[in-house]
Length: 216
Ligand code: DHB
Ligand code: MG
Image (cartoon, rainbow, N blue to C red; front, side, top):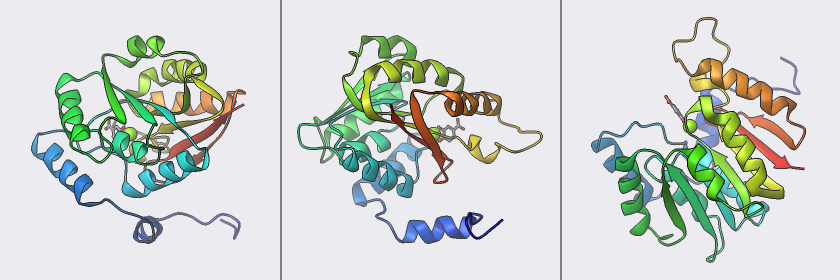
């Protein structure tokens, strides 16, 4: 490893996290309630939320689409980076998760700025208008990522942001014998992103690896 690239360790992650905005009391309560409700604790990290908020602010994004609402943590975080008339359209396949997210969005400071669309991503995304979003965040089942990307490239305007979670495949990207069954899908998707000429993208080593791209 040369001085131009530093190996990012857990210590670096903690160093970074300590020096950016973390969760406020509301988001901490949301996570505790989601965990108590038995939801999987697979939401994005606070420092990843900060990076995404910074990108959305820099892009002056107003309209965001998301696949994979889970508890609504990332939808609320992204909505907070938008102007008052901005909107996150977030898609959730699991009704119980959608109920939870709707309840927490409605009592959040961004109530009305995030709407939950129920159903499978590949069924809901085709209902969204072409060029109707400034950014997309994909964070759902990994086998359908190629389909989500294809639809996002239609829905996000030229110059808009494409963000995709879990490029590091739950930490197992480079493992010889990964245990998670979605690792091959992440690897295949990473190759698709690397070759996709319509997006200039890079994996930011934040959280579990965040693809950050601009639609060209
Ligand atoms: C899993 C999914 C995610 O989107 C994530 O960020 C972490 C873990 C999972 O399916 O295990
Ligand atoms: Mg994820």
